[in-house]
Image (cartoon, rainbow, N blue to C red; front, side, top):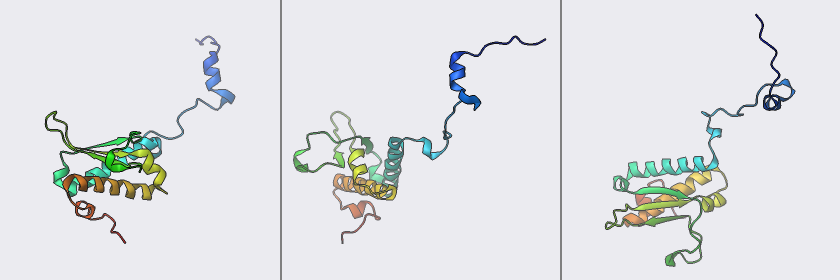
Length: 148
């Protein structure tokens, strides 16, 4: 018994142009290049935050977040500089935990390469955590670069 000849649908013919097979993903989902730039940045912040929490157990209750850009109206203490990160104190009355926010776009524009970006993220997190704890950044993160 033979199967009848079924004409191909227009959509199938379009996806299999020139007889080279169906199109598929160029990169497998389990490879690092599959992640978007935002996902890679989020992972970088999460790894840096986890490193800080391992060093300083007092940071366990702090929430770490990533925002795309800082608000257009800076806080009074920031002046006209563009914020790369902010610390928001805990509000016990409403039950909101302390929060450290890192702003992605300002850091990406300042970084030269991936290693520079990783160092900038670590520095921003250490500075904001130091502000929260009332310490110097090098006391929060021993790997914080010294001023020359």
